[in-house]
Length: 96
Image (cartoon, rainbow, N blue to C red):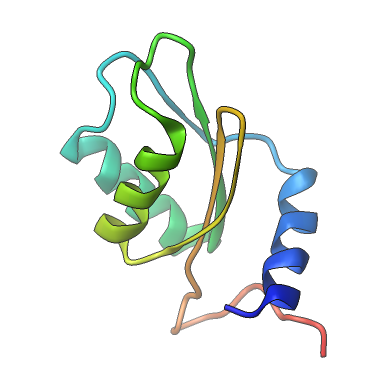
């Protein structure tokens, strides 16, 4: 992913609300599966890491990206933004 693509995705993510929240159970296989399904449908998702989750959001983001084969767009505070292009039906078109 180029820096221009990353900047474009960050701009899109600013207006999004988190669709998943990660709590005290932290990163479970079921949560990773939910993330994979959400990414497949939406391509770009935002995840909220609740305060009762003791794990580091950056480590969680890296693990989720690895498990879902997606890319970490950004981690700001306790918010994670992940992206994975849907090869069947791309929804996000990058400007040139």
